[in-house]
Image (tube, rainbow, N blue to C red; front, top):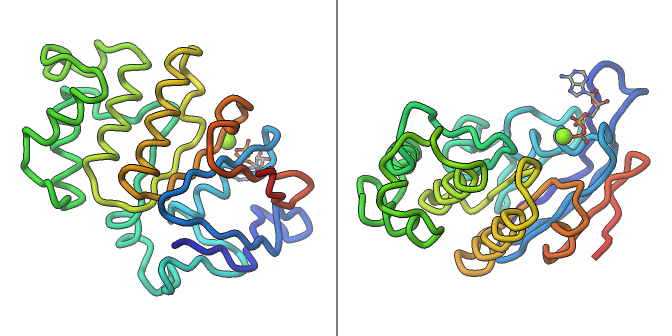
Amino acid sequence: MLELKNIGYWYDIQDNSLFEDVNLKFETGQSYAIVGQSGSGKTTLLSLISGLDKPKAGEIILDGQSLSHIGLTKYRQKHVSIVFQSYNLLTYMSPLNNLLTAMAVTKSSHEGDKNYARGMLQKLGLTDEQMTKNVQRLSGGQQQRVAIARTMCCDAKLVVADEPTGNLDEDNTQEVIQLFQKIAHEQDRCVIIVTHEPDVAAVCDHSYRLAHHEFALEK
Ligand SMILES: Nc1ncnc2c1ncn2[C@@H]1O[C@H](COP(=O)(O)OP(=O)(O)O)[C@@H](O)[C@H]1O
Ligand SMILES: [Mg+2]
């Protein structure tokens, strides 16, 4: 589904490149972990995959079309959904309205379907009362579940997450990571998760390690 071809990236000068000649393939129905030391360039790679920045060399291909051809704005709106460590919910809204807003902005096939959004939050363990109060009054684990429900209500086939369990305790980490597995397997999406937690990488179908400017497949 997504193919990285000869990707290179550096911030200032090419001699200090984070990585060069990276070739990776990602498929729908599968989950991928990207692991590596802090500062190795994981977040940078995700920003390229999410269309927030352009590679300095090479190209990224989605279903046969390069991102530069599709256009990054359209790509971000239609094809990719991002889950952040810090949840990035609209803090002045309820969980339900966060979902409905995202569904409207991305013109989801379920746009306006309040019952669908409600059902998704219910599935992820939120009560009717929790769905309608301000998101800031929920725990971290609950807020991350809302962020994941938001992804599940939108149509993007590609779901990327940067340290999505970084702020969660062990129990919530396990639950959240199982939700990502469901998104990949039951919704047939491609899930790419940056993580430094071995437990998280162990659950994913595949795992790449970024070290010494290269990506090596660990599983
Ligand atoms: N906007 C930027 N400008 C210059 N250097 C940056 C910028 N963002 C990140 N870096 C540097 O690039 C390297 C990789 O950063 P990052 O992709 O955030 O790594 P990771 O997510 O693996 O910790 C780090 O050395 C970081 O300091
Ligand atoms: Mg990072």
